[in-house]
Length: 307
Image (cartoon, rainbow, N blue to C red; front, side, top):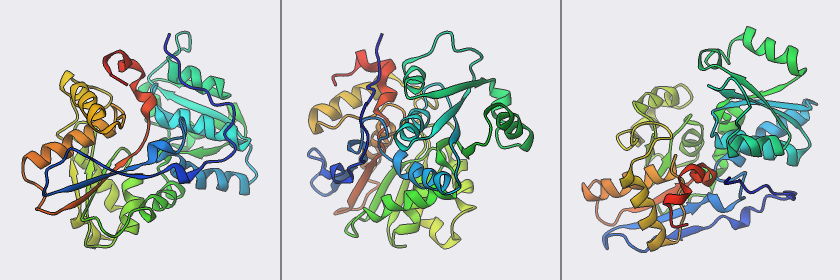
């Protein structure tokens, strides 16, 4: 069985590992770089740490001992939370969507357990009640005083933490490209960029353009014209893929030596190169693509990849 790397020592998150890497094979009229947040940590990778850090600090300051959060069976957020909680001295509970039993854990959930996370399985119907007072009260009765982090770190703590990613972006870029799941990361980035920059968000799920409405709830309307959302490169929906996506991932790795995750960053980069073919970007555009990590999401397709 394929397993996920379990890190025994995670005392320090070394942000000096994060680099901006220039892509080699791009049209001469364009410049494309990648912010390698995936290099931050093998498990708490990409944008996950930035959204979790202020939540963990808030939990510590409020004297909570247990972190509770939500996610699907292959959730990058769940495993990152489990690892970060263990690193920071918290107990953790993961509410898992769409499963009724733990008799057959996949590698992601098995790794969560190895980090000490208690797994609480609920139906999809019950999962969508996760913001109701009754549902949260039931969880509190089961697990005691809990500090709740929404799925994807989608709260004000997470958004403020994602601003740190925006602070890493030099002023020289005309376009910034990022995957959009809950909208938390792109919100943090938008808060820190000048109004002249174009931010392109790539949703990996069907009908993802609704996220612009979500984002507009937390941001000044004057900035929204600078955000463009694309949802046509979902390859069948969230977590789904087609052979052409895997071919792209392999070709990209062979040319750039950068591994992409199938769930988020690969779909974003596929979309970026599709836009290049459509002459979307003006000549001499300087484009920064943000690698949000989550490479553990490739476990189910690893036999199809060259890395």
